Image (cartoon, rainbow, N blue to C red; front, side, top):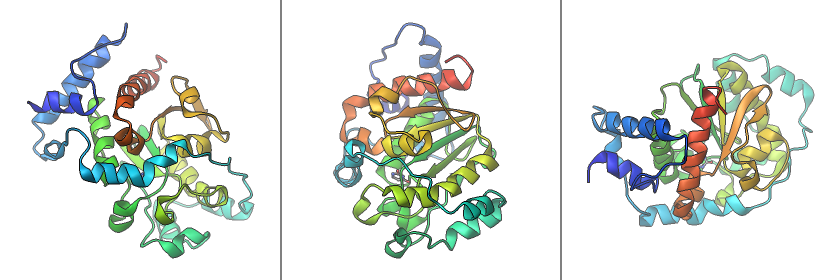
Length: 271
Ligand code: URA
């Protein structure tokens, strides 16, 4: 099996199918996959096809979040703190996040996980919060869900670090990978808000219900948020499934692919 086929299989897109009007995107994905196959970094060689034991473990740990209800953040966070964060530059923001003990999460994690990628990226992907691997390495989406996210990026010709920034709603790992509480989200959200202001992405992709709820400020079934162009403070935002959920429910990868196609159209002002 060549890498092209491997990536498409990973996304449950093989053999190729297409919706009317998506032929160009399918070609884009195939080209992306093809160009990755000659990637000297060899990143694509870490593709795993079908859920491994480790993937199932990840899914068992965090995918349940997808079905969990999340309270809408109340916005009770101290306004002067928010104002202060809103004036920070990148180094100041990183330092403040590194030293943050504003909520109880910091006591239970190894380190804060700030975010990673191109600080001028047009694409911003937002997850929920660090898991065990991210807590250990200090970078978002480095575990099995992260590998799938990397493949999702490759399918639309994107690559971590190049025109892509990846961040989470909360910067500290919640104990036992539970869903962050509303007050933890409200306390941490100003950091992401500032990251967004500094990056000024052209499109935000909310990965999963926690990210969607926090950024949209309202709770809804994830399925009902897909396929619609939302907005976060004037920036177009699309919603798709969390990669950890996709590891648990691989049949949903086809829907994630639809969402990625929608995101590409949105990015080009065609959604
Ligand atoms: N899940 C998330 O939401 N974020 C990460 O960084 C890793 C897993």
